[in-house]
Length: 413
Ligand SMILES: *Cc1c(COP(=O)(O)O)cnc(C)c1O
Image (cartoon, rainbow, N blue to C red; front, side, top):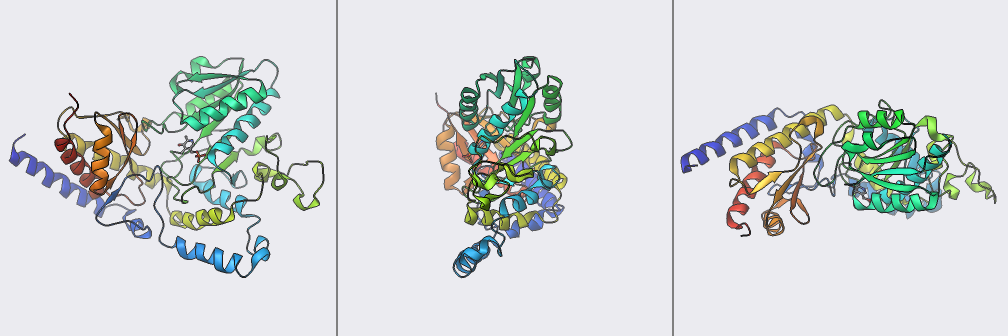
């Protein structure tokens, strides 16, 4: 490519980025977040950015609610009901009617609750269902915990790639645990189709939404998902370690037998009775005293979603990742990076994963230049596109910085 062509291409892509940003219905949302103007943050799929109004709200939780009202806040300040209340704020973002989502504990803990409860639900469907199918490419914690849940409940773990799930289903399948979007490649799996296949085999479908909630429509109710879990510190911007959520479809709530029945999941927690009697509804998914400070931080952070349509978010997310891929293709030295994220929109989440030799120094240098993505060892560069605060000029800038870093980082011989 000659110098002039390169300059023309850069001019052209920059001009297009400006046009796309000017037409972006979500462009105004960026000002709601604490971000540097001289950097590009492409790691919101790992830790979402801070909405600027949150610190004052958390300050109020600490100084007034805790500092002045003290124990009265459990009732008067709505602390006690926060897990269900915040669950109902997340519900529309994942296509769930109210009353089915409860917030609390980590994703890892909720994977445990969901898989054991699903195995118990499946055992009600008859004898001989002794297999738990788990996405073989899963984020490790889901796999570790599903394996332990299987040992506890007398099931066998069968690791299966998501596309091969339909062929692996059978009369022995009890539960299937799948990821909506693969954390490494950014591949979006077919939640409606796979859920239908799981149901046709008489099994229970558990979906992990960590990399889809807040980035694309999920449609939990519409697609008849049984149980789901997800974290809130990625696209939902809840803050480091913010509590996860658990969805139990209404039709399963009466049969949801939690492996962690705590006093907070009791029908009458202050009855302090020795016998456990589960609460009705989503409350049954609670365990112990909620982590109020983190939880109310999340609640405040969810304000950025007021008036936002997830369909608009999805449209922007696809346009952003398309544009980033186009810029990378135009700028990056030939053959240095290969996208492992599917080109087909129906199979793409909200991140772009590029395989790259020397991925480690490349990401380090990108971060030094203010373009923050992350690395999944050994050779994947991950760039998360959070439609609420990443724009098209950011995508163009990141691709240009990547090309410059690649040019100064020789590929391994
Ligand atoms: C981020 C993520 C987790 C994180 O689990 P924690 O318990 O919050 O550490 C789990 N599963 C998947 C698929 C994830 O992407």
